[in-house]
Image (cartoon, rainbow, N blue to C red; front, side, top):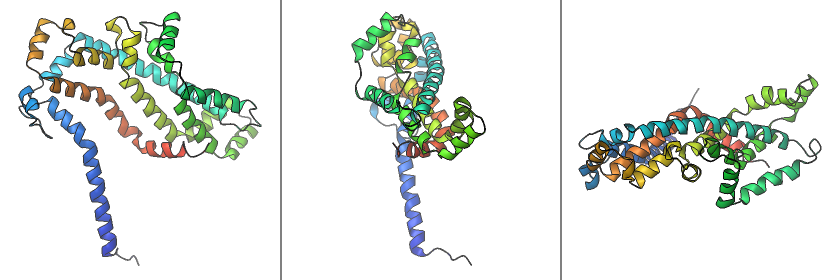
Length: 294
């Protein structure tokens, strides 16, 4: 016979649901507010009368941002960077984390390589040496200038490494007994068992590439090669009118910085918002399991 929960238990559950709903509201409020401001008139946004619903609904902010050919081109550059960068980062992370997850008796130089990669996370060469390296290797004004300098994110390697070390050794030994080599073991055993941490690393990588803007300003001399965030930072934030046509200037006069920035923020966050629900169920588990064992 199943006993009904006591009043104290019911009160505790109700309090938990109320508290979690309040936290969810705090997380969603900024996004909904930004969306409402982006669809509001400039006067309403300037007056601070916009809450969770647009005031004097208008799409002029999005018209200004989307109608530009430069916006479409930069959006394509960001998509190209996202695909190339994500594939490269994930491949390098897996190929580095797998051998480093072995015991010292199996990989005698493991400790040396672990410290080699870990020190790069603590000490960087700096902006000027990195810029000179990119320039001297002929990567300026190419998509590879945005992808190759960050090809090995050490933090993600550490997450994968710790997760691989937590997997039962008996599974790997059984695979070797059956005749599988390291490549087959990695592909058929480690990767399928590592979906939570791989999803976590994938999300980190995608967010990092999509939100990056500073390297685009540094490594791209031609503004037509800017990724989306660099283009928006230059045209919207700095208000560079030289890149605008007469119709764009007239449209900009009807807008305010607040509505345009809100449209920019929402468009910039939209792709990640669309992807996150598919990775969310793995995210917390991947973070916890990938960080508890050294």
